[in-house]
Length: 365
Image 1 (cartoon, one colour):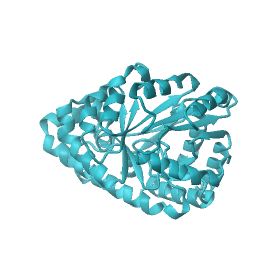
Image 2 (cartoon, one colour; image 1 turned 45 degrees about the vertical axis):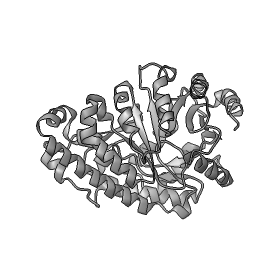
Image 3 (cartoon, helix red, strand yellow; image 1 turned 180 degrees about the horizontal axis):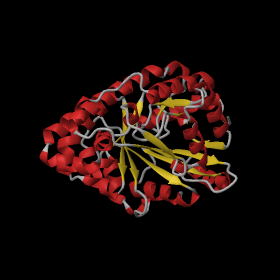
């Protein structure tokens, strides 16, 4: 794998300075893929599909998967602040740990989880089962990767998914929307139970990660941290207004941010923007990840979002897919008048290396 352990030593302090708000330049992670054909964006890159397939191929022994991961990473170049990472995918995997059936979609590079609970009463009672095959495989893979890479890969928590997103996945969004109005207390109890299961899973995986055997923690947003961190989310919130968000989720978000040492909030798409003001009221929240969403205006059409995040003293992270989007780095830094507190996670193809290197140089990398 084309990554030397020694690089982590410098990156550890760089990222700690970023988390603490003292790094004077932006974090710029550039992962370039060598492909025989057209590659995807960050979420649908070919190497990520290979790794996902291996993680979910239960016919493969856990001991064989780390080498497949290493072979997939051999096709990558890491520029700037980019690092190799491992975490169990995809978003919403907590539902799988709770017993949801799942099916892999190789074309989209994800796994879909199927509704399990026909009522809120069942969601209020559902529990993690330690003998759940997906949970056991995920814990075993987390340990096996640490053994195989021996300190040359950052390891993080699985992409559990958001509490209300898991409730919606277990129950189905349409009835849940009605129940928010008609059975609000039952919805709150269901959300509280899923929050408890999230906490239990979080602790299980923290126990499986040995901080003395990794260069730092990571998660699906591939920063590095010497403390555990997590990207919190509520994509279901795109279907509700701020008053419901404040009533049903804000208290959970506050508890999540107090529980996890470092947190980033995943703000996904135009319909989630209405909740940003409430999100920014949580003092323990470290930052916000903004994703404008498929078909939405580009990253340079949302000045209020960056300004609000910056004014609240929060970190801000966005994705840059391909060299054509590098101009968004200039837009955001010029808009805010600073390069501090910003993280750009960039992906592209190997032939774009010169363009990415030019921007890295421009920003002091």
